[in-house]
Length: 288
Image 1 (tube, helix red, strand yellow):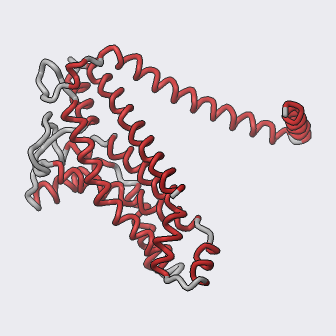
Image 2 (spheres, helix red, strand yellow):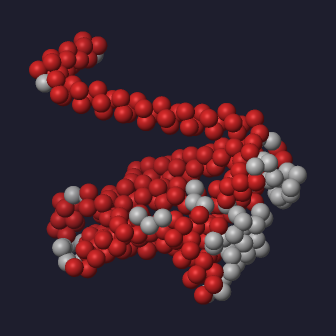
Image 3 (cartoon, one colour):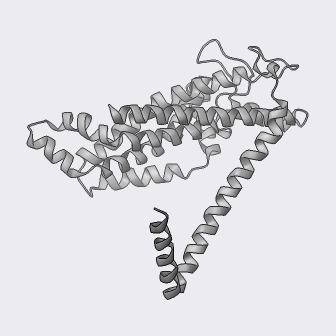
């Protein structure tokens, strides 16, 4: 095995000597990858070093007070908003992608308009979504500052992401899968749900994971819709802050910077945990 690796390395060296520009591109790509990896390690390490010393048992008390600065209500509110937003945006985005890939006429004006609209919505700053949620959900519909208003606002924000990633996952499924199912006499709807969606599940879940990360880390849109009250509301129509807003409030006050870094550590752990669970579900579904 080592002999094969040495031969491969020598062959690459000869190839780069014959084509110096290829060797230069290889060095540039390797350097960029190294810088990116180093920046990521530095960022994570800095957050851990600054935040871990300030993690205390009082941060996980059930009730928030000015003495303990508990982030437990923020964790619960974050999970509630993530679940609500995905329940709203997930089915809409997935079914929209199914229609575009499996039912809509290829190259039609409708497909072009929908795709252009989705790409446009993906580039809108989150503060604009927050102002829309404030004007429509909070003011016009009379929901006031609430978890429900925040979840609906975030569902609109991540809907294009889920739709586009699902569409790409469906396009990546070979047409031979569909043709083989049709040849066995299976209907179109059954083929989509039993064959196509099953094959595209890893790609769809990747989009859901990306949407989850954006929801967990969102601050601007939730300030104008969910509010900044540090407690778990009695209903979805009550106001409550998420982890990202909790961290923003503590850092903005300037008196609890250490607790803000501790919140960042917990936020990082929550994102990693959600991604790990999503990956586990994806592997289970792929094997099943």
